[in-house]
Length: 333
Image (cartoon, rainbow, N blue to C red; front, side):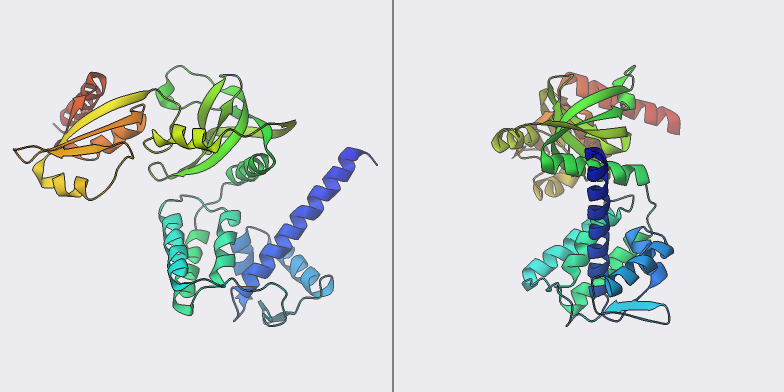
């Protein structure tokens, strides 16, 4: 038997252990029991695999798992995993996180939902029921196996500080850019509220710079044996501070906007960017300034305000927004 064979066996055993642990967590979050088909849907496995794992919990691990008329559960008082204790404020934070997860996720990943299932056990009954309904809704979202596999691989690479390689398809706005093979040191995995997507932020060895990669555009990916030293956390945080949403690898641009009086209060009620400064003008308009990483992301935010905002600078952004509105007006004519 080779070293590679040993590694493959170890990886298979580790994946099985994670699957069984996940199953125990799911059973504990349903003290009244849960149907086999619902378990399979929640964890993204076949019903046959679920039955096999339930049997393993009973016969191999000797856990107090029970089954009756297709409904399975676990005697929580005899189980070995203790419940998580949360304060009422912490419980509410979990509920809000679950709600945000559903609102801003366009696909279902069983690994993401598993964390909420574990936290659910420590919630007061009304909040636990709310989270359960949220997870049920999330479980109906479409699956993307390649996306989920890439998230797992990149998470492993990030945790073990290992360099990854992958095929990457460029965005349409990058003009004539072609797909390429990237070699990256993964620094962060960050969700985007604007695009409902997940991004990898890391050091691109070919470009010798920090780059942002949309995971949906990552093709075949692989771990390398090479490791890396992580950057100074303060430097990474500083680089991300200029991003409007996710993109932090563009030159910083000073953006200046004017907002109409009828939306001035709404603009003042939120901090849209950490570098923003806001001042009121005598005519009721609001002047808003910030220094952001490129204009790709903030452009969409500006357009969302319609004719209630005017771009003062930079001139290239002003011309771009004006041309977009002109094309829209022409189309509606």
